Image 1: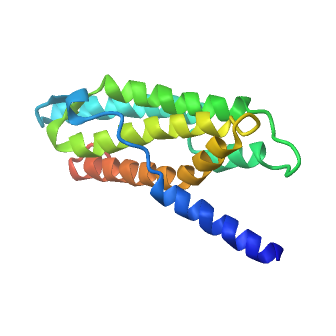
Image 2 (image 1 turned 90 degrees about the vertical axis):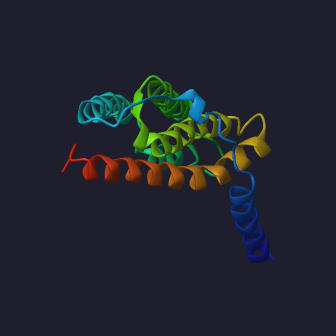
Image 3 (image 1 turned 60 degrees about the vertical axis):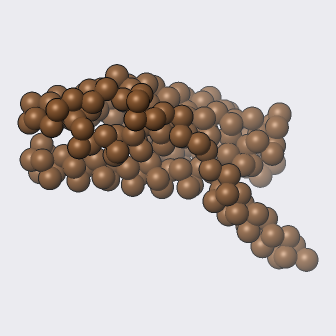
Amino acid sequence: NSFNIQNLSDKFSTDVGKNVSMPDHYTSSSIKTVADTPANQKAYYTKISSAAEIAVKNGVGQDFVILGTYFNDPETLGDPASVKKLGKAYGDFAKALTSASVPQSAMSYHLAALNESYNLSQILKNTTQAEDNAMVAFIAIAQFKTHQESAENSFTKLTEYFQANGIIK
C-alpha cells in the first residue's frame, strides 16, 4: 500500500512541477538594449559575469546541496537560513541583470535568464514556508526542478552567445 502512495506522491509532484509554471515577471520592455557592437558585447559580458561571480559566492550552483541539507531529516526541517540566502542570491542576480545594457541579439537569452533567476528566488522563498504552509512549499519544490533546468538552459545559451561572438573561448 505504501508503494502505491509513494507512486501517487511522485506522480503528483511531477505533475505539479510541469503544470504550475510561474509567469514571466519581466518582459522585453524591462530590458535596456544596445547595438550589437563588440564593445557592447564585451561590456555586457563583464557586467553579467561579475554578477554571476557574486551569485556563485552566495550559493548559486549549490542548489541541490542546500535544499538537500534543509530537507535531510524526514522528521524535522533544517535551518531555512541557507535556503533564504540562496533565494536572495538569485533575487540579487536578477536585479543585477535588470541593470545590464543588453546587445539586441542577446535579448531573448538574457530575458530567459532574468526570468528564471527571479522565479528561482521566489520558489526558494516559498520552499522555506514548509512549516507554516506545507502546500505552498510542496508546490515550490515541484516547481524548482523545472525552473532550475530552464535556468541552466538559459545560461548555456548565453555562454554559446558569448562563444559565437568571440567574447569567451
